[in-house]
Length: 343
Ligand SMILES: C[S@@+](CC[C@H](N)C(=O)[O-])C[C@H]1O[C@@H](n2cnc3c(N)ncnc32)[C@H](O)[C@@H]1O
Image: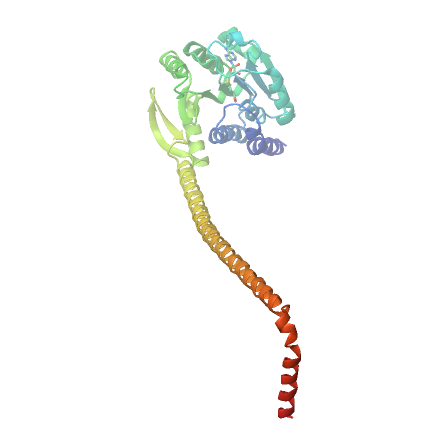
């Protein structure tokens, strides 16, 4: 029975990765979506149970992946200020509840989704479970200031089940360094989670007992995305997915190959245009030469015509004269005598 559930949930995850991700607007790199899907898949396979949750859902691009990863008895909780944008103090994204709900209906209709309109700062750490439940995958992508980031990490840590993972967005985004600052403050304090991996825009945290397991799971699942292992980050060693990885290098190489083949095609097209232009110029020259020859011939023809008319006029003048008419019998007799001599 559980195996069937797992297969069904995995199918929904795959469908969202293949069709949904590109269709929903927001911020979620495909390479990171794959890594998050692997974490969800591992939880399904190892019977880690609990809800999923996201703070800061915007239109649901990343939330919907989480929502597709729940079993029938688990919930997906989406919290955002939505239309109350005055509370989006750092202007990170812009939640829209109507758009989110349409996207949920289209891409996660089979999951139990709970939408909460609030600022995460309204939720007290001690009371986090009443809003989020007990969570196995918690995505933090709401306010991007250091205070809100630290607060949201504490919320996530409080409700996380054993084997759970927290995914923090924008940690290395140069425009949102409050997130890195907030993570630093969280790790400098009394903290229960440690980072174990980083993928485009995301850092992954888990309890120390789980971090090593997840690091292994990701290494095994994504050798083509693994760029570097054991990079130091704020007291932990983490693996870097994306940057410098075989897949990303291959993508650059394919990109360069495609550009150079497009360049060659453009150069070949330019060369054939130049050849065609040369041929057009030759044909124009030939047409001009033919035009000139036609004009010359027309002049010659006109001259010829004038000469013929002049000759006809001279003949007419001669045959119409009196002497010509008087000498007609003489010309006839001379013709008769010539004929007899011959006969
Ligand atoms: C960068 S967007 C989230 C992107 C989203 N995760 C995605 O997949 O595209 C940030 C979101 O956080 C919301 N937000 C900002 N401050 C918040 C707060 N204090 N509490 C809850 N949501 C907040 C914004 O309304 C916005 O929708």
